[in-house]
Length: 330
Image 1 (cartoon, rainbow, N blue to C red):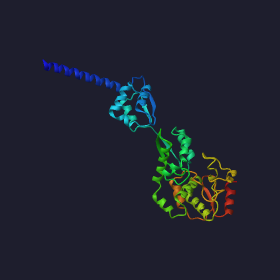
Image 2: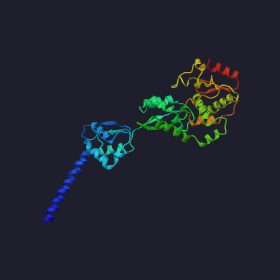
Image 3: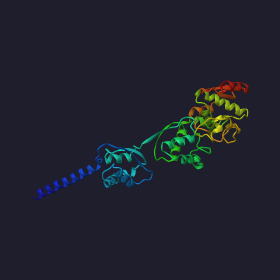
Image 4: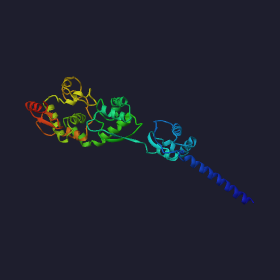
């Protein structure tokens, strides 16, 4: 008789456990819906797991918030909650959603920095993608303590935001994004370039400044070392560098046409009014422009003028230069 009672009790217990298990499974299933909906769901930096759990319920992505919250805490996954933006849909189970927001499935935004882009354009690009506030990003670009941490010997981060394609999650701070760009710079620039600069006429930072000018002057790789040569020759002869892009860096940061009046402005960047290099780089150069700044071609050129087809005419004398201006610009 006792054996029969124990058997019955065991069956009842198994049935109860099974019912609980089935109930739990039903709670993990997605809410019933006529059609699948895709939603972009963001987890804010520092947001609590409880807050996320409640918002998932309000968005109709989970059926029973207390159970979702309990599963996350009991499994330890709640401690792995990651800030960022996620692509979720109404057919995902609660467990699938939990795995996504505590895993590595954060939505990434493609950000491409092209050679010659300046930090103002970088800030605008990031703001257009909804990744940062432009002014907060630029404030970080001028933060002297932050620049020291990044090993940048300059008043701004300009020149060290390496041109490349990046994938960045929403919720990243301006400093975190800047650090990604600058880390790429130090990873991509060979140590040999830095060592060569120690024995050259320019420091490595000065080479970056020159590279930023070269990058703005030409998009043709074959011309970079020639333009570099012209700049070095002018420095050797104590001539002003007279690079048009430096004249407008501080007033046309997002690009624009250089006018004759711009050339007479007295600024720390305008190489028509100052001796030597600008105060800082005026763009973010690629590796080829940096190489050209460190390895100028041997020429007698002192002048160059645009042919209006993307290329330049180079001259060794001012008389030749005037003839080229008459030919290509008049």
